Image (cartoon, rainbow, N blue to C red; front, top):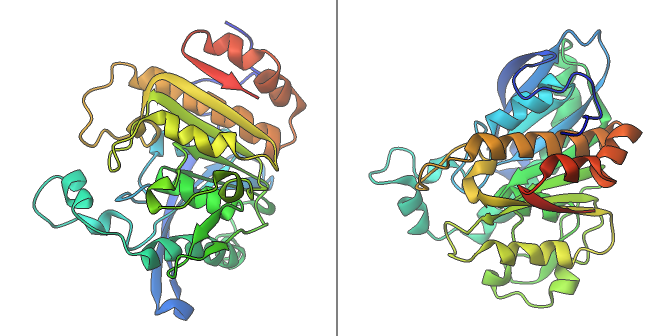
Length: 314
């Protein structure tokens, strides 16, 4: 096994103690829209200002998704802010009879709900300076922010990173926010099912450096297509630096830390470990300008460590 780029990396221990804080904001400009957040922050960092990573959930999800990943990243010196998008979140199925996936499949998601999801992100960023000022025990550097998300949250990240998306009239628009330095897509979100053509134009407008993560079993639980359709995002993103990890037998929900209707995954712990290490190396490289992380991830260390468990392109 190759050496990690940091001495204190372990999948079993947390170098910094992790604390969690829940809160919510009200966007008066959008009919008092409620935006919930869940913040993971480390203690014992000697007051050093730390990079902030925003995470956006998938369809039917919530701020509680991907806790395994948030805790790990936080314990290594990051502040993680999970954001919840009303209208495409767990409110779709909570309190209703039946399995959440079946309930979600039976519903039509209005375009306005999707667009509101995108608008939640710049609204959140506008609130964070006041939020962290109020919680002065959280040492956040808001000049260094990363964007990330799973599935619908990955699509949200793509849009925030410059991808074109149709408005309520079907006209392609750009909803990018240039306050982010880089992003991670956990199960990238193609939009061919919306009847949108010209992928080189739609994804080609992405100008945010992105790390694309998927798996060979990363099928769509809603649209019923396989992981190869997710690669269209990577293949047509040409403006900024990009990386691609495809985990052998990795499925859709392993990136979220839950199973939904998927069966037991005997590789769950192994795959979560790969996701943790890959994400930490990338964030260290792009948000902390760590040259050792860059060399480890992009030259040989990560692929040597990954062995036959996946493929990586840089």
